[in-house]
Length: 211
Image (cartoon, rainbow, N blue to C red):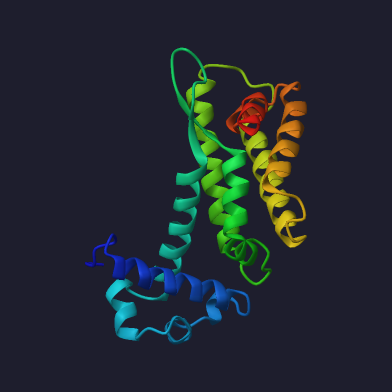
């Protein structure tokens, strides 16, 4: 695509198309959503659509990737893990707040049985971030629980919790969810599950909450 991604007109068009996709995904499977349905819902022309994307698949992949990239850009923060280095960790506080602010998007993308593409992409991105974290902080250390099992457990648990939180209408605030998850992670930390340190907590998280 030749258009400048920072152009306000491009941003507006992309946002309209993304909203249209989320709206349609509430009602249909991805394979049943046509370019015509997307453009009509977004109230733009097919010509405009093809100025930005090669085809429907290119659009869907780009839209999902943009949502995931923006999410991780907001929630991954620097942490002084040791005196020697700073590493990126996952802020629970920022994550739950971001998801609440974009609940319409995350609810349909995580809780729609017709579409599991977003869940898989989000799961894989979170797994990659945890793998990178482990490579930085656990070099040459023998893990008591294999890394792949830790990732599967923590990744599935977190996304499952978020999915249920959304499905239940977010009856708990982001602050309460942050504190609750931090407490649960604190229990696992006593069992030498090293990936709990990937999340911004527990002790650090509570300091943030008190500010």
